Image (cartoon, rainbow, N blue to C red; front, side):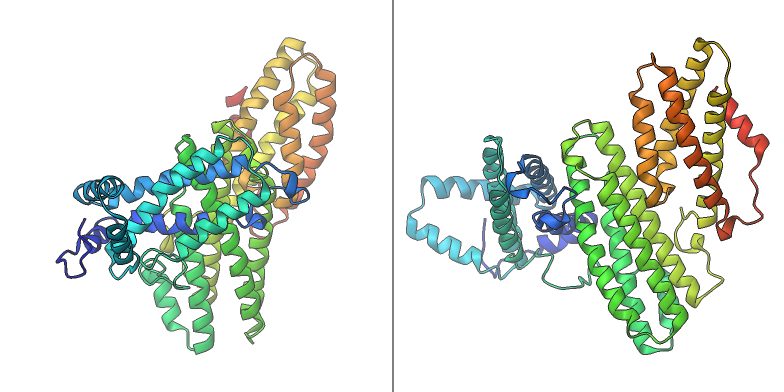
Length: 455
């Protein structure tokens, strides 16, 4: 493990070029590890923090430490890792204190990227052992949790090579590579507006970069907790986006642009409430991997859709004929989303009508009820995230009642269905009044065909 500055090696640069996505993920996870120790970013109640056991939160931190270590072991070549471990062995067995001091002095200079990378690797190997042992106590106090966070944050920020907070904008990672967007920004004549829109786009495309590192397929705890911490990081980043948007709208004189940016800021405020106060609320206390993964997937979908819609709305302000499909391959328009929500709610209502008006035997009612539950599982997976923040709690409560129903008190559940149906019909009317849905009626025949597929 040669730390001589004159060593003719560019293996770190080679690794960066080869593993761009991995270095991007390391950057995101290092940021996440810092932000997760700011308690205001956590989706937990804040009323009794001093008596709370932060065991689950520190377990999530441990899993992210595992993930970062795994990524570092990919980007550091095998020969370099072997040299590192040989040196660690020699340091503990054979070197004198004086030689150890000289070696550490040379390493801590961090005058090459290699030294910075070795220091980070060394940090996370040590953190893995320390945090794993602390978790064995089973009880992590509020102040203990904060103290661990301060130590980790300090070490990350003191790394001269991979400190993600060294610059507000990392030119290697924070860039807009979409040609349609860059052309639109270049075409803006007003210099101040061009600057503000450029910064807003940097924020929005950074959000998409963070979201791209969320794994919605795995049910392993390391992947799930890494994804959760990225969402916690996004809460912090969205707050900064809000603050910048508020500052910008105070300076912009174009009233239409000001209205658009205020509208986008409001949409973010509502959807972040939906994600962090509803979808992710106390998620670390929920142990079932399928439930955990579903919440992560919903949250990622909500924020990804919102970010893409915002990027397209700003683009269309300056270039009205641009389409979302020209910017994002898998873009879904607000019209499609509204139609999808309206149709699925309409079918949902048909199910409830069928149950409410049914005079069949209990066996037949039970069959319809099971079919309704199957439809609700589909709705929960694909349509739930299209609901408004204000509608979420009512729907969530009804779903909980239905899925917890054991099957021996149909009269009780039918009363709940009757009450919820009133709310559902009101929601359906509100959605039908959306501007993009005017003169776009539901295909009732198709809706009945879909209903029959579940029965």
